Length: 148
Image 1 (tube, rainbow, N blue to C red):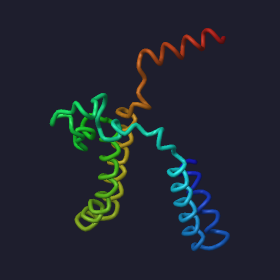
Image 2: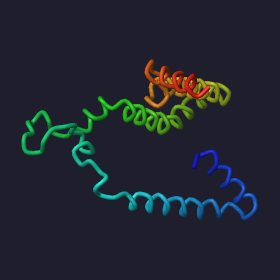
Image 3: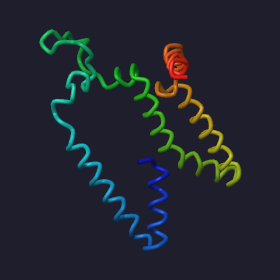
Image 4: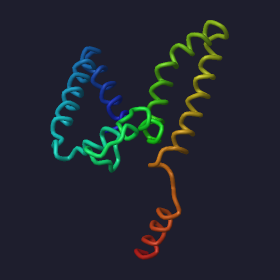
């Protein structure tokens, strides 16, 4: 379910039943997340890949092949972008407060809107799900010409 749909549900329930319902909805979503996590089979988890090791056998590891969170962060583009997004969200309130004190509310709003637009453009340009490669474009056009 998308965040926009959840926000709409929260808004409607808060309007009809009061703002306390939003906290109950939050608790229900937390329980649903826990249930979804517990429903993952342990056999479905690749432990070496989860530790940051690609195809290295456990007994043949050299000190350089040890799991490293920083190596995963630097080599995994979605992880780096998600980290930058989280840091940006955490720092945005401090930046907004600083801009409000020194330049006013309008400047803070415009600054944060520009930063958000730059972040959206960066997200669309860098995330693998949004990239179009020649192979995916050719497959899509080939299947379209085959079906039509």
